[in-house]
Amino acid sequence: MTKPAIDPKNTFDDILKNETDEALANPENVGEKDGVRPKASGFNFDIKPEELEAYLNQYVVNQESTIEVIATKVCTHFNRMKLEGTLKEEEKIVGNIKSNMLLIGPTGVGKTFIVKLIAKKIGVPFVKADATKFSETGYVGGDVEDLVRELVHEADGDVSKAEYGIIYLDEIDKIASSGAMHGPDVSRTGVQRNLLKLMEEADVDLKTPHDLASQVEAAMEAQRTGKVTRRKINTRNILFIVSGAFSTLDEIINKRLNKQSIGFDKAKIGIREKQDLLKLVRTEDLIEYGFESEFVGRLPVYVVLNELNEEGLYKILTNKYSTVVLGKKLDFKSYGIDLKFTDEALRILAAKAHQEKTGARGLLSVFEKALIKFEKSLPSTQVKEFTLTKEVIDNPQKELRALIIDSSINEFQRSFLIQHGVYLDFSREAVESIDGKCGPNPGDAGALCEKLFRDYFHGLRLMKLEHLTLTADAVDDPEGFLNRYIKENYHGN
Ligand SMILES: Nc1ncnc2c1ncn2[C@@H]1O[C@H](COP(=O)(O)OP(=O)(O)OP(=O)(O)O)[C@@H](O)[C@H]1O
Ligand SMILES: [Mg+2]
Image (cartoon, rainbow, N blue to C red; front, side):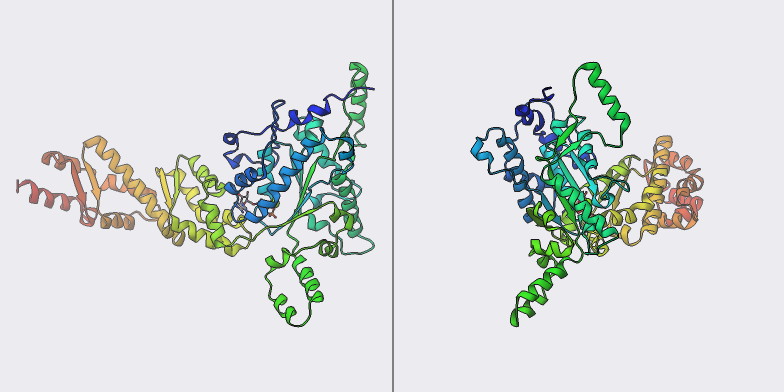
């Protein structure tokens, strides 16, 4: 008998290392595939539910009651595993009922976001996939066991680490069956069955049965080194979190409630909001929706996420960890432009995003729409700072033109000051007049000023002026303006 590479008693110490808060401060780092790789020593999984809850609430808006449940169950799951190694025989009989979770909620309300943050905070390998990509046989699409192998990959090949990972499956509602006896429904039921085995406890081969080359390689490696590397991974401690939008589940719940109640109550039930209905979900509703009872049985925790209203979306934007705002700032920063937002603009964008009905995802598209013209044009200008205001949102073309004209004039002002030591100021009307003269290309404003005021420095030097404000008159008739100015001021001295 060969000893496993890692002593199971130490496994947890090896695996779960609490990441420092500094490393976690930036949720930008929470990528699709970045299972955090804990260091091999110094395990201290002593995160308490309230600590994880507080951590998640820093980033996630409007999901307090959901986070309360998720944080608690995730912590209990990992603490239970920690305890396991120390249990007496009679205690072991109780068995391990895992806190696999089902998250129900529409698009863009934070399902994936929450799970990623948890994996990051706890520091376990993490894999995310859509349930739709699997088929019963694994010939078309993938085999659910691939998820477990992927977890090993995320753990840099360390099977023991992977055995404490988190697998997150989205679009789980799409593998519900409508009860037909043939066609895709049968396969969906098959996927549920395959999944439920993993969700409870199963040994998964590290090499796929079809992968002959790697099987041979492993055998040769064993012959050469005399060591047999672990070939299987056990799923009993892997936490499964599944999620979906469950678009018609509220109708099923409503029907059940209506059946249960009579007369007066019935009317009351009829007017319930979708969200309130979903919160009453029971196992039987999920079975009615098209899940095998054994599958639902492996998901003891249900959580319903809130939809995000306008205020919620605004709160996301003003959250100091807001990935939408930070991301957009970085886009502009990559061109050396400091992007800012007024509070009023953020409120307008939140309201627009709410109309999109795609939760926080709407924020992204609304931001893109509001900024795309600026993101295109400003990098070719001298503009180094740009504030998104209500006016910019309402009238982007006009504001963009004004911005470019200002920057172009600015550039002229600077070079005139450097060359001649005189600061030329432009009145509002002067700028408007330049705007009128420079045609379709506002970036020409500086060159136009150059032409108009080329000869000014002689007269200005004569008067030893350091500062001169130019009006619309100056733009319309530069020579006449300067002559009048000299006459009025120079002779007057
Ligand atoms: N409640 C929230 N608080 C803060 N940010 C959020 C919230 N919900 C979503 N976001 C932001 O929107 C992004 C997209 O959300 P997420 O991926 O979690 O959506 P989802 O609920 O998984 O939706 P889908 O069903 O479309 O996958 C997140 O990365 C995050 O930046
Ligand atoms: Mg998602």
